[in-house]
Image 1: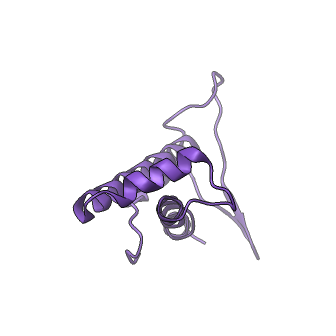
Image 2 (image 1 turned 135 degrees about the vertical axis):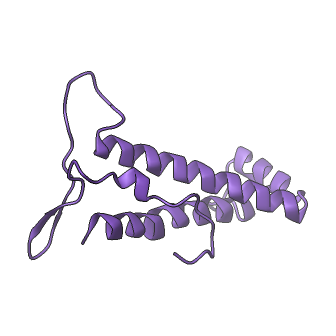
Length: 121
């Protein structure tokens, strides 16, 4: 696995499914007895025009992108999560150990612009 293939995998297996899951929960609130706030959001979403539903999906995609971008920026060392001078090492272990975030690579810069369901990567 390379840093680039790791980011593509995160997009495909985390980013896009996160958006799809949120949209699915808007269309069909989860649970045998969905929470009232989930039912209210679903009814609101169903009442939107097609254009507005597309805009909502785009915003959900931007939110998923921002969250993953932030995590990758932390792994890259350009955003901090503590007060100590520290670094994170992301290692892929298979038949060999591969450092996916060496100092010369910025994972967050490899991330594409947003996640949209049905969009091929």
